[in-house]
Length: 63
Image (cartoon, rainbow, N blue to C red; front, side, top):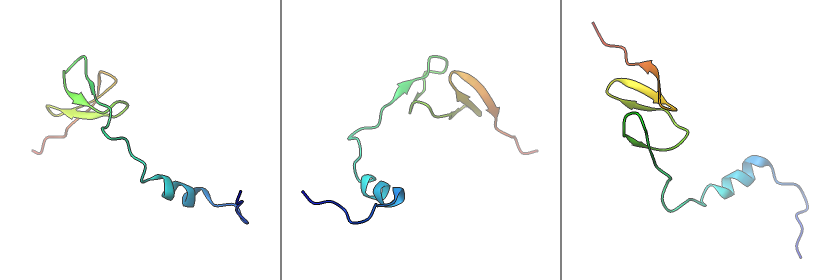
């Protein structure tokens, strides 16, 4: 079996692994707003940013 002469760096290893993707990204429904979004990510809904079912930020309105 072939063995590498030198260790490959983490960035080189990760570049090779970027091409392995899931066929469909996982999606969840927010229990508060009912919006479909990717899990463990904040999302905007009606001028508010939600994360884990809570409002974490309001969009600034220009005056």
